[in-house]
Length: 463
Image (cartoon, helix red, strand yellow):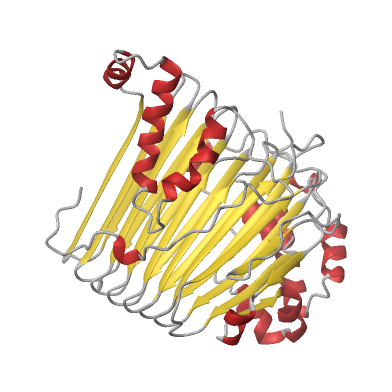
C-alpha cells in the first residue's frame, strides 16, 4: 500500500523554508507558503466524499520530492525567431521574446522580477481567491518554484504563438509553475503548454503542478493547447482558470497522453456579454494510468455560449473520470451551453466515470448534456474485420476516430494530423521522451481562428 495516508513524509517544512529563501520570497509569499504547507498536512487528496470511493490516486507516493534541487540544463533547439519560447527544467526557466514581438509590446516578466517588486504585485500575481481544499492544490502552492507573467497588448495585427515547454529530467523532481496571462483587446494568441520527460524515472515518482490564470480581453481570441506526455512516474496537477470579457472567444484543448496520475481542473467564468468558450479534452490511458478531469463553466453575462466536450479511451487497468458542471446565473439570459462526456473502454480492467451536472438559475436559456461509457461497438469491429482489417488495427481505427471528433473541432489547422505521431506512439505502447533536437515538441501551428467554429444561435438545436 502506497504511503498516501502519510502526507508529511512527502516533504518537510525545512525543504519549503529552504525553497522560500532560495527564491527570496517577499513576506506575502512566505505567508502563503506557510499556510499552504499547513493545509497540505491536513487535507485529503479528494475533498468531496462522493468521489473518494473511486480511488483514482491510489498508489501516489511523492516521498522524497525536492522542489529546491537544481540539475543541469536540458538540451533544446534554438528558440524560434517568430514566436515566444519558454522552457522550464530542473535548472530553471528560459524566456525568449523575438524582437518584432517585443517591439509591439509583448512582455514576459519572470517570477524573480515579480517577487522583486513584492507587495501588491506579488499578491496580484498569486491571485488566490479561494483557500485550497485538497492536498495537491495545497502542495502546488507550498512548493511554487517557477512562473511568469505574460502580457499580450491590445489590437495586435497578427496572432501570437507562445510555446511553453516543461521537461522533467531528474528523479524526485518537483516543479510547480504559476502563469498569469492577459490577452489584450482584439488580439489573438495561441499558447501551447507541452510536458515531456527525458526518460523514465527509475527512483520514485515526480511531481508537476501547472497553474494558469488567464484574462481574455474584450473582442480577443485565445487558444490554450496542452500536450501532456511525461513519463509513467509523474504525478501531475493542473489548474486552469479564465475570465472572458465582452465578445471574447476562448478555446481550451487538452491532449492527455502520459503520466501516472493526472488531476486537471478547468474553471471558466463567462463574465462578458457575447463571450464564447469551447473546452475540448481528449485522454488516452493504458497500463495503470489515471486521469481525473473536472470542468466548470459559469455563465454570468448575457448571450454567452459554452461547450465542454470530453472523450477518453482507456485500456488495460487505466482509469478515467470526467466531471462537468455548467452553472447559469440568474441574469445570464439567452445562454446556450452543453456538456458532452464519453469514454471508450478497450479492456475489462479499464474503468471510466462521467458525471455531468447542470445548475440553471435562469429560464431564458438552452442547456443540455450527454454522457456514455461503453466498450467498442462489436458491429463496427465486424464491419472492419470483414474487409480484411485485423482486430488490433480495427481497435486503433475506431479509437482514433472516437478521439478525432474532439480534435477536428479545435480551431487549429490540421491538429489531428499534427498530433497523429504522438497518438501512434501511444497505440504502440511507446513513450514520448524528449529529445535534444526537440522533435517531440508540437510543430508550427496555424490558428484558423475560433470563428472557424460553427456559429451558435439561440434557436439552434444542441446535439
